[in-house]
Length: 362
Image (cartoon, rainbow, N blue to C red; front, side, top):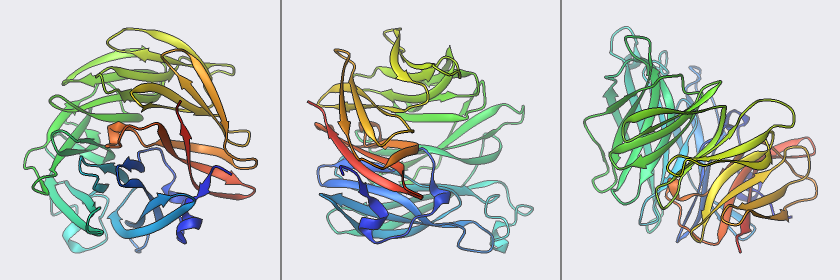
């Protein structure tokens, strides 16, 4: 098999409550790292989850550290020096009932910002929490995070509603050099409710591509535009600054995914079934779509967009991909190389688990 059962190799458990799309795998010059939830709902208030950080080698996964986040899942990014950061987030509303200090009647709605830095040189995991009042509205939950490796900033975003009942994203900034949370947050007012969202470091903060049940929107440089009708599946800003969107025009049998570029204003049919798992990624400066179906043992189709060629790699004879595919991409701080590292949720027989695999782009 070309797939490795990560929790089994690392001799750890995993929680099925932690199955969701995000960015939980990164590749640095020092190696490949992944994070996943190992235990959920540790306290009676159902608010504390345990995560495990592992380093992946050839047929091995070594547990490096574990930690605890308040409510919800975790993301993973890397900085320019190869250190990795586990990111989670909650609010005092999520934590109501855990202790008196989270009494929602006594305090304004606050974010509880969680970042853990794993120092690749020392092997130490340290946490950096922050408590900030929301300024853009109420009813917030953690949405996603992104990293700007050049500026040395990590952005962590929450979604809520403002006083006019409009959906908003409020994001907070962590400075990597000083290991502190900046005082001011930023608020983006959205046209529609973000059911799916991808965040990127832009020239002036956080850029966002998001979708609701019927359309795709982009917020670039603080300006929002409705891009296209359809269901958002993936978004990516490449090393040249072009925004790529993968979407399904209609949720019907036989539908295929379309690839849209904002600057080039191109919109092409990929031929990839809309039911397949599919993500953008760069390797050696070339843009690809990595796809696989969810009915047969894992075959990875590597679609090279510059010449429309497809290379298929059989990954296993029995494991079938389920709901989630994640790639180590430059938008989460990963280094560009010929090897595309992936993390997928797969089923072998009656057992489901996180699996690692990699394919090489020629």
